[in-house]
Amino acid sequence: MRKLTLGLFVSASAFLFQGCDTSEVLGTFTAQIDGTAWQAVAPAAVKAGGTFTITGLSADKQIILHVGGITNGEYDASVLVGNLNPVVYTPNIKQPQTTYVSTDGKITITNVTDKKVSGQFNVNMQGTSNTIKVTGNFVNVNYSI
Image (tube, rainbow, N blue to C red; front, side, top):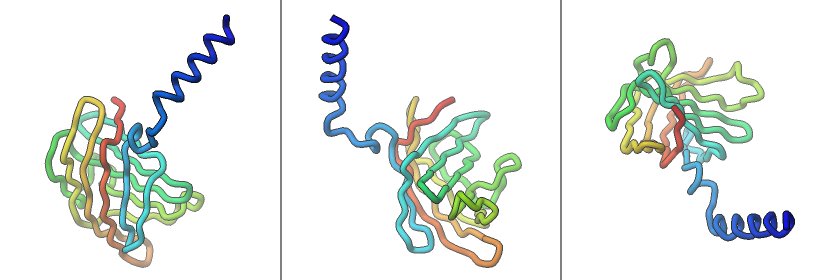
């Protein structure tokens, strides 16, 4: 009986998730990093203390957005959120000492539901020896509280 129940559960799960990709479950987080396309494999967000922290992570890169609000609107990416830089880009997470921080630009939240957040960002960023332009979108990224 236990094998039959397990088999039915596995079959039902496969049927329910057939055709779903991770973007339907996790949302998407994409960017143009100094003209090069990039996509996170594990976007996530946290809503706490009147702010959002939205993270895009791939095997080697990471972008973190610290948004100074939790409602639809445009947020200045040159103003610290608490003591955090609004946008932080790490091009090689195995060598996190090399990072870029936003110097100007905007983060725009376009939609917030009780479980997901969407928007875009367009920022100039400063590294240790150069500046880059980073633009991107986050769509239906799940957030926790």
